[in-house]
Image 1 (cartoon, rainbow, N blue to C red):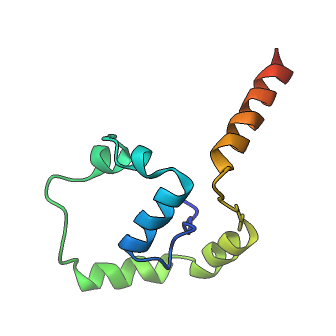
Image 2 (cartoon, rainbow, N blue to C red):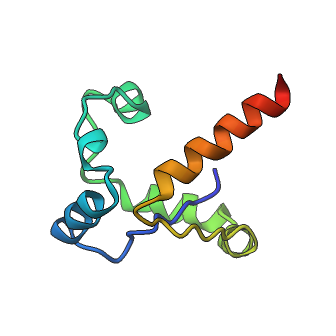
Image 3 (cartoon, rainbow, N blue to C red):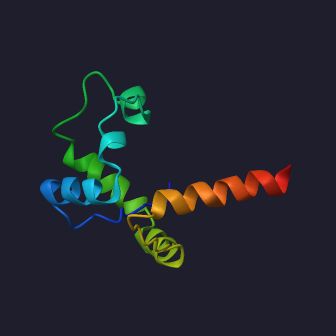
Length: 99
């Protein structure tokens, strides 16, 4: 329940596609995958929420705490063209250390 701001938060769709091709993740990103969105999405989602309920829920939500937690847990990853190779090497090293 901690918000995660994706590294490409400020990019538009075309910029994200270009970046994914540059770092070699585009082909993976277009693979079909059933994620939690398809599992938990209701058949008939509410598209016009009840304003009174919104006000009620917002009145008890601790925005300050969530903002502080988000700021305290910021993690920066630099994704470069050799990122996949580096992650594979780190994973292999972890496996070798375990064995």
